[in-house]
Image (spheres, each protein chain N blue to C red):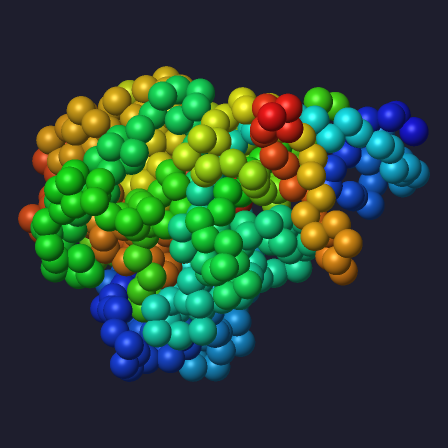
Length: 107
Length: 389
């Protein structure tokens, strides 16, 4: 295994062709790579959340993922903003990895 | 060997475009047939002359069997279907040109169209992203409310704003300029002038995109015919010669979030091959029909094609350079934003051909050649065609 970090999961590692993968823990810290503020839902499930922030978060380890930035006014989100992991609905059936600004954590 | 001048577009056909809750009056299949029939007539051909067909997978249209049966085609020597969304209409030009340049077929028809407003293909009415090729999106992105193409292109636009300082007003100028062009085109759906204030006052849909950053949903179909060089010369109308043609695909094509360079699209990757084949530089272009599901994509493509340096697309547009009379008129038919969206870029191809023939009516450019056409589909698949006399 080449130890490249991959997300999203794949059948083969595009780096070395291996089909052997392992999970690894990451810090949960990252920055907002890009974001949007959704004002109109195209699926009824998201209507109660409007407006909500969809963000691409780049983790310290270098991989990116799609998520939401929560716990902050949507007008205060910026590209480059430091964020960290927070589990949404942690005890529910579908916990989702979301992000919140680092500085709100220290308040 | 390249495809330079090995094939030409000899016929174009479009249905009427419409946005009515009562529907278009045509099924997806019937409108595709009508577009093909009009293209055959335009080329001065008989139905039986068509020996290749590239149908679109969108909507509820025909596969090749339906065209063959309904048009009475005696001999279909070539058929394929591409899966690049809105890039299909231009990417198909490459495979059609390959087929006629090698003698596999003589006249290949490329067709797409659907009831994208009144029918089941309406994107804004679908619960999620279709297609098996989007499974990562469904599993890892849709749960966060990133559920329609707009969201992914808005993420690219925000990244561009952060890197280069591009603005919502610059995006708005794309919509304003294309609306000006649409007012010259009787087949365009949007009939009212748009000011930059109209754009800035339109509601946010997914910031940084407002309502008027987003293209229409509409009903309609379009088709064109690619003919072999020797078969193109004796057609009644002036052939639109394919000077350069290329398709390109971004790294990690289904994942905008994880690709190394979020802003490097298939159009940018294809462009150098198309320009090299055509022997044309970006500065030589006299017009461009750029696939425009969202205003920002016009700016991104101007940069990706090399018509502007990175970050200079927004100021170029803001200065009015994409208007008729500007340095590079863009989408003289009104584009997806103001003419129609339902043909996977074939309405852009049709306008390029009309310009080259001198049939573009009030939108006619004095010197349209060479003219560039792009398709951009799914999440960054792209194709670039350069057409000339």
